[in-house]
Length: 116
Length: 114
Image 1: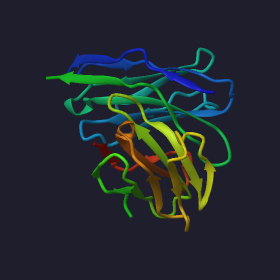
Image 2 (image 1 turned 120 degrees about the vertical axis):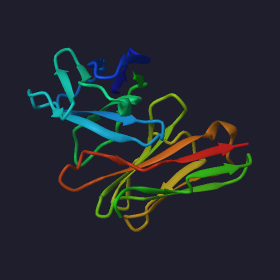
Image 3 (image 1 turned 135 degrees about the horizontal axis):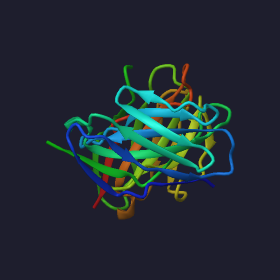
């Protein structure tokens, strides 16, 4: 079974700073996907970024980027030039590769607060 | 539709009553998932469907929980004889199309059992 661990329950930074959220996972699979989801106070679940394990290049989406270290089973999220709207819970999630989409396994989340 | 919709958004029920939660996925999405999220925790998988076939129900906590998707579109999660420990946010997600592995979540149904 796969497990996902987010070791930082809470983080707080000033607006415009860069912040990195940590995520590690445990799996015996070689092919899989990793995701970061954002859950703002509205409690919607919003897909932020994804990474395919077979790709060596780290994924980037505007101010959001990941540092994927497959051997270390690490998948951190970097938010550059943080904005007040980035305040949210962030969940790291794992999905093994199979026929079609598979279930997501989530970490416990990191509560990020961006201060003005 | 434009996104995943769920109804009702809020449900308060008395212990022992049955509840039915509905999910309407993104049009054309083949896969539909149900998750449960306790406050302050990440979502936990319950079950999922490809078309109308239930592929995995290993996350359903006990036999009071069941789900169906009879026509491969709308799905219903039913909880019989509700208990207080069933109180949580129930989330539905769908996936399909080009990025078939990306799941898009609905707003959730907050269930409170009194």
